[in-house]
Image (cartoon, rainbow, N blue to C red; front, side):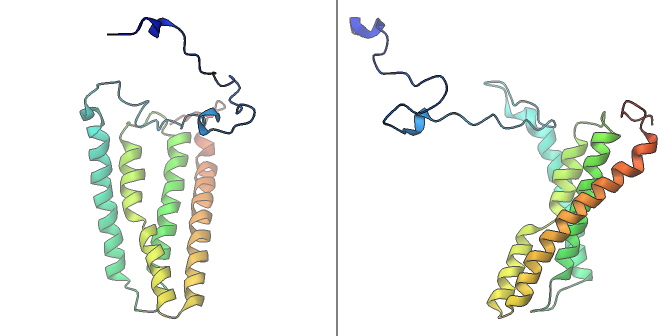
Length: 193
């Protein structure tokens, strides 16, 4: 049975609206909330409360199929161009740089030319194919293996070169793709294709 005083307002102090901590205390609950995370346009704002999880099934299938294809191509690259024990892992470096370049091209095309692309194209090609193709876990393992094998120079070179190659590849590929499609874009910046 509820107590008659349950209808009264809560006597505890309410933190200031600005999100600043109360004087004399820095309780975590008084800190301002972080801004909301951006919503992936392929996924939408999320399922409504109580919505069936099947609404995400097409995206999950697209990512799975693309990821399998990308991983198979990467595996093929390591079979065709194996790295001997203790050698510099050029194959993984090239794969990761190529995958990052592919992501730069894909995102430039999706934002500049194919704005009306099918909803599942980006999860299939980006997260799936390119995500399965690149392998930053193997990159980390290669660095650790080189360190454990007494080759710290190669390990540090791999650590730095892969990172620099990946960043340079995505930046250059994105910029070159935007430059290449610029003649096809109208004055509004939308594709005339």
